[in-house]
Image (cartoon, rainbow, N blue to C red; front, top):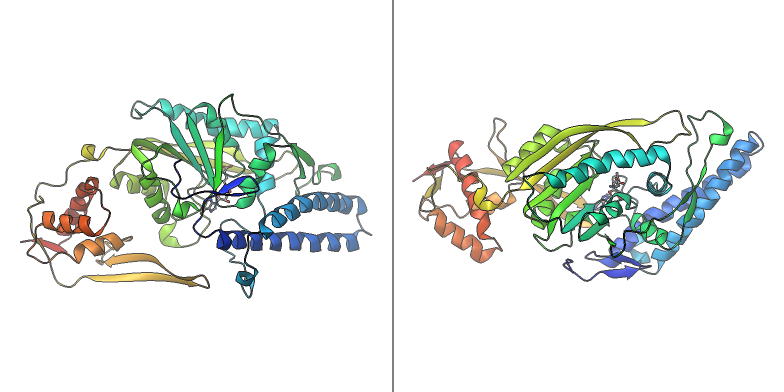
Length: 440
Ligand SMILES: C[S@@+](CC[C@H](N)C(=O)[O-])C[C@H]1O[C@@H](n2cnc3c(N)ncnc32)[C@H](O)[C@@H]1O
């Protein structure tokens, strides 16, 4: 088992979260609101059917079918929630799982055998598979994880390439639909109300069919929040982030990714950078992401774009073209990372020049208070974000103790692997170069 805590089974779906009730309640609220809004919409359609009845009837039939699935989903979660947690709580509009279920769009692409969608899947999977042959990736492809895995098709297809394949998503419905499909086909409608050439293209019906994995293979699909990835450290050879790296800020994603990938393992991103959030300091370009990884000990082995029509629907007049960014980087073994500059050695003693200024940003919601970022304010565009760990180290600098003594103290107080020493020396050297620290 690679989980850090015991999965809890809800309707066949392993759920690995810190607080099951809070999680189930959050999901329940989203899905129940979505269902309620669609049930009301059906009532509205029924009242409107005096005009365009043929069009309206197609919609009613489609919503009624999908609503049945959504009602079953809400019912499944009902036993796990705490109704008191729902009192007075409004839905967070920035919740990345979203009130509107995207499951049907992904189910249509992934499990309905539609030729244009199969073409998109082929275009996505080819680079993800080919990169495993890259000479810089020397590991046996034993274990991989797909984060934000949707209804699971891409992860599922990679069962043939690895000994073990894991997939995770925070959305209960995505994981639930994958598990349901393994037992029986799902009939659903894909609803578009505009960009239609003719009435018969309105809300077509589809049947999603599962293709079993090769004999002896199995996709372990569990629910979790990638921000608190419940996976043992250094347990993966490859981590795939397909249409996901733009869902949560890199400063939250990277620490998890870096923790779970083994030395010599691969991080692979595929998809646009169509960020789901607005914070301008987090809307990184591909170039900045490459730099971010390289600064933290990764070697880039793929950096290119692949054009696809995203979730293509043949029945509508408007489809989206993505120039998907395909990025792959190997986590370099620590000893292979360039040694920090010669001026800093473990025996060097440092002092702080003048006063250092920090700012800390907190986020307060009705779920409580959470520190979002610590910034070291250096001015002139040199501010250090994500400086929480740096602050801990800087507090120990006193113009008397050597770096070695500080590292020993850090290791005693924190679970800091020796492999981090090089990185810390590099950061300290950068602060010496910026004349924030002085060598005594
Ligand atoms: C754009 S979809 C991509 C789906 C899938 N990778 C694919 O390409 O078919 C993003 C997925 O990320 C999931 N997600 C959002 N926030 C998440 C989080 N914090 N942890 C895990 N999954 C999350 C959503 O539920 C959604 O299924």
